[in-house]
Image 1 (cartoon, rainbow, N blue to C red):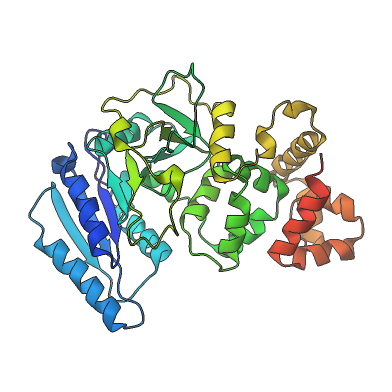
Image 2 (spheres, rainbow, N blue to C red):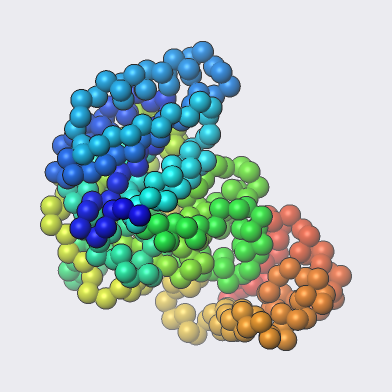
Length: 377
């Protein structure tokens, strides 16, 4: 496996049929101070449904890519014959590159970067390579109008519970643990504690994952984010973003989103990092509320006084006990053919037939029941 600690991580760029936005991405990369020391892997998704118009757009993108003069250490272009879709294209590309490299950086074709983007990404990937609690380096920060850190916070970066899909990097040993199978995710998200932990990144995350499970959206990012949460991972983010979204002709983000519109002139050429690898709860609270104006339950103030937190700790203890192969509770579940480890809900239902009916309910209905019974304070 290449890409040792002294080398830059390879850049993986995903594109489809948006020529003008892609040109802006490439132009910004050409100005990056580390681009000539970086290997680039470009994955070009195929046209949809043999559409003549789509074929033409994809062909124009590929002609442009092949016409580029050399501006990086190397460029390798992968062209899919058929359309994989955004999520499958990204998963395929990352699997391909990560199998040969220890770390990697990901960009999509609607993202402009600051000239020190690769400097920041590589510095962060090297710094936290052996810190297994750190799972992702986020390249995008929030628009300062939407997000504030405490005035006495003295670093340029902060730890957060939420990954960003807008210019990011990670390590192959973390990515190899990605939970991408929706059947596994469906079982996982039924656990109330898994929901509470995941939602520390924002109260919108569990509903988003349910939409992914039910096929309403096509997102690799929410599955990757859940993987990070499940492994008690955290992410490092810049206060001033190294990436901004191109809203022209965009298909990944519908409409204008103010907190993704960043002034790259605020970005730093030299980055400072927190001394401790810990999430500052006040910052995490603020970051979560950017996505949904609701404080996640596990980030509320005076949480030790909340009854639902005591229930959370009890369930946490049961879940940890269940990891023991000799656990009585595990044997009970196996004997009863139950596929959940949420002991608290079984106590609520008491009647086993009602419990089995709950387990077989659609995911959205299950979540409504959980919210009603367990989110009461």
